[in-house]
Image (cartoon, rainbow, N blue to C red; front, side, top):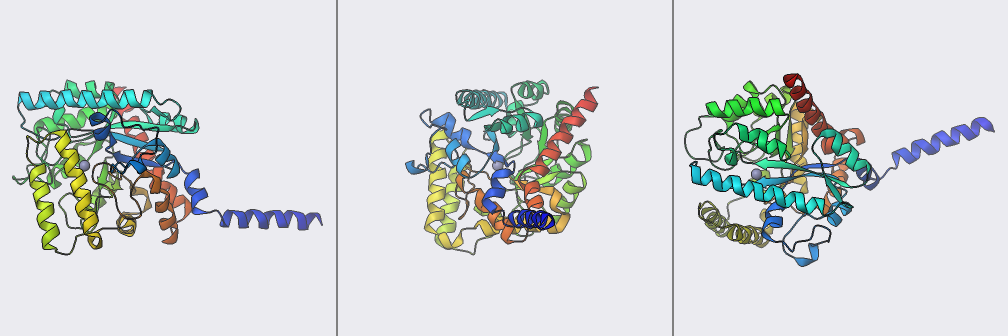
Length: 400
Ligand SMILES: [Zn+2]
């Protein structure tokens, strides 16, 4: 009788383990999104309330705390993005001022929602804040343009809370060449090499998304710490210069780094030609590349961009494409080198992953594709935390 009792308990435990739903699993994981652009909205619209579910406003926003709760998204990097203009003192000063404004906005918004979230500055902070049932929010800087050629600015931004730096954006800057600039790819500048060393010393993660292929290879050569592509995809599946080749992904993994898969349609699936859509897209791109464009106009263009992709739904990538890119990385280099960087509020969204409230769908889809609970946990945070800790440890070693 007693033996039967133990046996039935074991059977019960095994079956309850086996029957753990995707939802249950998802809420148990620490989940991290390494790239969310909501600060663009926060800076331009002081009325936008992160504590409310804004989905009903139909304003195209994709991030707030109630929706993060609904989607089981725990932690996120909020991004300080500055557009690339001239690399002269006026342009750099303007970008530097803008970066300060965005950082101040992120801090004031997070600090005024203490029951929902807290700013995190280390891997330990992420765990502590998450354990307190609030969202750890970290700050990443997309584009090293505000640094100009002043190396002391790297530490200055570290002190303000920046924990990763995307070396450039869509155009070349004083640090390196961009994957989408039309001029010759010269990789990292000498100043860029200095920046890589300084980022290693301070414990700031180097983000290789957006940078040119040559710049990537040089970063790998000079960086003592593993690096992250915080929002990039596989070029083998979608031929875009912004995406990474197999060779780059292999080297990234060999160096211990990870590629966090991006939800931007254009980087997920090469659309079949459609003259009407292609011309509408190219008009928006032309307007966007105008250096004189205001933030308000950028917001409007981002809405237009969404509208175009709604108008041509058959061309839209879906959550299945996102999983295809994850799958591709896993088959190429293994489960330890992939993560999630949605690019929500910066162009990221696909059917099935329209905003942070739908993040749970990713876990369900990964389960359907045969991924184990342990594997999915690595994708959601295990891999990112390993890299972050390694970056922190290497900084510690350099400083001591
Ligand atoms: Zn980006």
